[in-house]
Image (cartoon, rainbow, N blue to C red; front, top):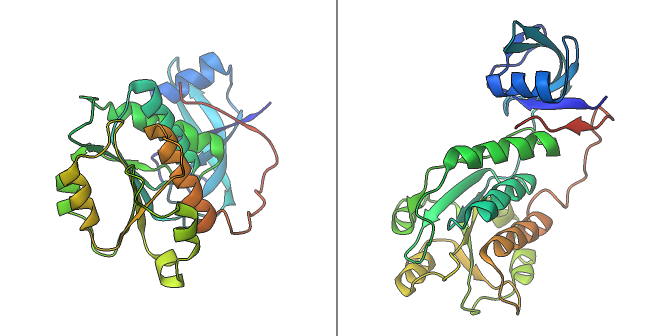
Length: 262
């Protein structure tokens, strides 16, 4: 039987009892057909990962008895993805894959050419949680409320470097730029910004280029869809700056995990 891995809000420590949400209880009981005593893995983004056992209560409630810690909490790259919202299926895909690629913050950005009028933040959060559970991440990225691009630029935090994917084709190749960074730049907090399907407006590009520590890069000779561009840039950053070039620690468990978020 595969072991179900869950993100929970509760503090985790040996001997603690972690309450599970109604959705988690329903999925464990009625979809996965788990019973009291079934093994679980729990994480909350703060305390590492823990073994636990399921306790079913009544017809709808469930909790988990926390056992031993399997992994200590570890630092992850401080990387934001700032992206213009796209249609529902594709924005869900971006949230899921960006989580797999280690993003710390998902920031929807409203631009002049953004075609999507409403962003379902709770749905994006659910996608991020599910992806973190499946990929054995120890954290779930923060999903922020949409913000106007000009406000994002005005409030840009000092010291955070910005990688701007330049759809005009004027930026140098992303691989060369990231590969040539010095040690201080590699340790800095970063963000990647991706424009909408129609591209940034001229004044928006100008505002982005005026941010301190901004670097405009190109993503090759082909025109990429917005979701493809976001994931391509993230993959390049992780490979050349982030945690892909570091040794991968062996996990303390060798069993497969199953999805739980419905």
